[in-house]
Length: 340
Ligand code: NDP
Ligand code: GDR
Image 1 (cartoon, helix red, strand yellow):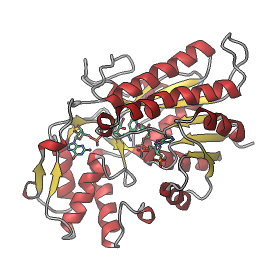
Image 2 (image 1 turned 135 degrees about the vertical axis):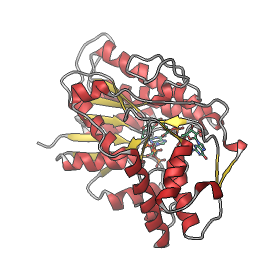
Image 3 (image 1 turned 180 degrees about the vertical axis):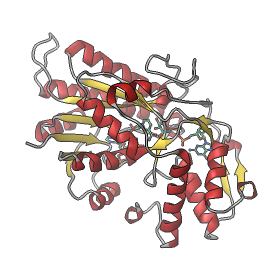
């Protein structure tokens, strides 16, 4: 019988790539979707006709229990979150509730539905993946970062992710659950939300190239990140849940680039000189910045056989090409139908 997966965050970037990957592997895939009339659900259904939808919200414990009862999953991937770091200062409490407490609610739903008692009775056969983040490292104590590097988160988002990370470890240790976290570094694609810097840049370049804009406003150009391709990273999530033992893994490329280098590569890919168009804006700087992040993905390579395939230059070219195509065909990245 086909394995059954339940994915929270199905309408997001990673949810879509993970669903495609699991469908390719022969899974029956269910996505948890929130809201009464969430337009991103219809967009997702167009791309992923084979995904079945169950309603639920990470803010609502009962809805998660009902979803697990209904789907009876073999694997749960918890990708749902408020994921945009600047928003986590503006809505810190909501971020704590969704990105942090949402993990507790999902783990509790699995525990209760599996009949695992607090006294240690019963066992959970459902495997759980938590979308942890390199933002937990924050102000880094060493470079590159490994599974053993200390956390010093620099945003309410990073703090909420650290809570979810430790809680996942705790459920593994308290209840013997197969519960793991992937500490994923930044990963991008043509499906990335327009608020994140890579997509903001690829869309900005496309708009300038097509005469739809004359400048691109950005914040800190000196921040450095380890950027990879989302399609590669979702494969690591699946490998972690199919591994013999439940363990946490760092997932990244091991290479770091600055926002300035990203901008230069993207404008060059469209035959433009970035210095003529990019304007820096202090208002886009963060209250506390993460200056640099760089993964040491050795454990994932050795134990899971995972390696990223798409290089930084290929990723940037892919995103710029996709946005040039999208905008030249009259698509609107903010509208449901225009998701590439
Ligand atoms: P997106 O921002 O693209 O997607 C976030 C998803 O969370 C959306 O599907 C959204 O659904 C859902 N969501 C938001 N609030 C709730 C809620 N209350 N209940 C249920 N679902 C909710 O994120 P990504 O796909 O980029 O990332 C996936 C996960 O991985 C996130 O947890 C993110 O924090 C984490 N991560 C991402 C990295 C990256 O570089 N992309 C790196 C490391 C970690 P809706 O349509 O309802 O808004
Ligand atoms: P990040 O991604 O915060 O790392 O979180 P984002 O793309 O937002 O920022 C990366 C870096 O670029 C700098 N930057 C700008 N960022 C944005 N969004 N807009 C700008 O105009 C801009 N100018 C400069 C930022 O200061 C930052 O240093 C992403 C999310 O997907 C998280 O959910 C995930 O956990 C981490 O990656 C790993």
